[in-house]
Length: 497
Image 1 (cartoon, rainbow, N blue to C red):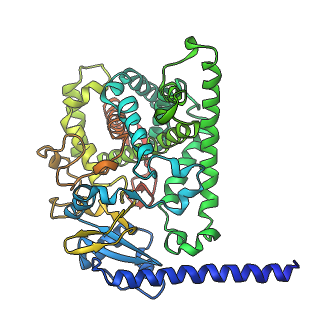
Image 2 (cartoon, rainbow, N blue to C red; image 1 turned 180 degrees about the horizontal axis):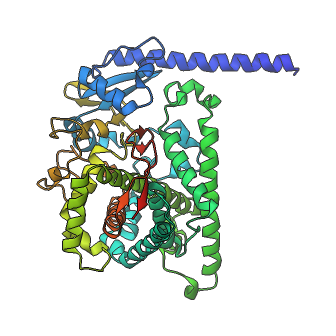
């Protein structure tokens, strides 16, 4: 076939594909018109309300919800998205009708990862998902397992203190977010691999920080492939190509560590570390339904590094930023530490239950600066009726946690940083019964690593406040950068004094 014939054939195939996708869309519109969808903006032909999203989608959808209600339908390109923006609607989706909304919509960016469809956050509910959740709940994140690693986390805090002391003596300012990220990586790497996989000040550590940040931002970035399915193969914004570099590099790092562990295990039991990777590799030696594949193990570890570093560093950075611009709250937090912790001793994990005000600061940080503005997107597994409306099967569903955490119906003066509000609320495990506060999600798909995340960020934050005073050499900016996590737009740079 000559070049012109090839181009003509390709054009015909592409045109046919686009025509079929458009036809599917119009058939779906006709079918949905027979059902009573939640109300929402009409939008423009073809593109719907895409132009209304802007760079801060969580704020844009919150403003639309004030017009159309807490359960609304927003047409984005060729896709209908149902958005829940109140605690009551979140409860309907995540709990009352939780089984009907257990499906996941997988963002186009995520499909760049090898084996993405086997990763725990995106797996459909079934035997594999239940097996991985059971392993997480019993072998990794149970209270008993986490209690057994307290000494390791306390040791990592001492390492962090040493790095801050070095900076203080050198009169150097510190990027708080990066400091917390490095500490989180060291903690996770020692928990998983029994070693520091990267030196704190190495270029490889800087690269890892860029990789995880890049993944969080690109997965959360509005992507034409998610709204116009026929455009997916073309990756017009180059999002898949860009994020694939980050995913591949993370996989390469984890593969190398697994290979090292496998070599040690071949020498016998004496060469096993008893760390998390050994626990997971034991499952790869099981046969039948209880066993894991190497890909299962690798994907779990990759997710631990993504979900166990970036969100924690973001939360602690926001908490420190709020304290440094609220001297009264800073003073109360520091006084509590001075009164409850014996003089000369560094705060430890077992001290946290005796620090209610400090924990209230963490909770208020998560409320005001919601780590994940949207819970990971759900998908209706069947037609579901809610409040007289019908949400059709396969519809994407977003829960706007950011909107709920700022709603004056649930929170007095919601834009003010006020930790005292949590001193009298019955929210002991970072979940409220009415779902007005759910920084880790809710329902059966709640974050599996919640218990570890709370311990890590609370201990890191307490240590930074207890051991040092801080000043801001260049002031402070509180702007936000939207992604899967809501990061500070400008890093928090502070001087230990």
